[in-house]
Amino acid sequence: MKEATGELNMTVVTIIAIGAIVAFFWFMWPQIKNAITDQWDNISNTDNVQVE
Image 1 (spheres, rainbow, N blue to C red):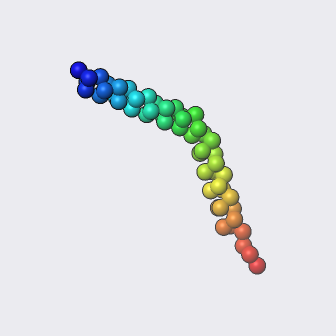
Image 2: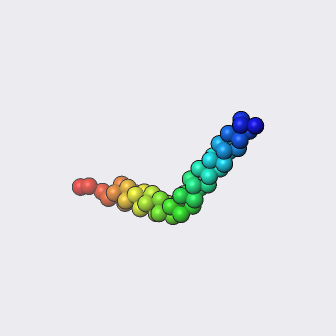
Image 3: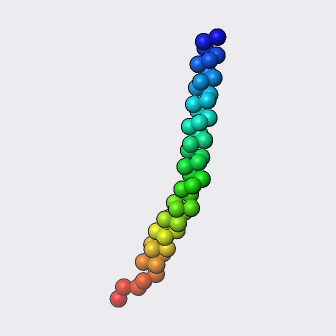
């Protein structure tokens, strides 16, 4: 019986941890996406400038 309780506790902890990770990315993804897009645009604009 103690083993079953331990396994249930680990399952609950795992589900909560996965939920926390999903919630973090759910709220942070727009900012992460914007940062990646801004960096990509900066790199693309720098590559298009011709040095004479």
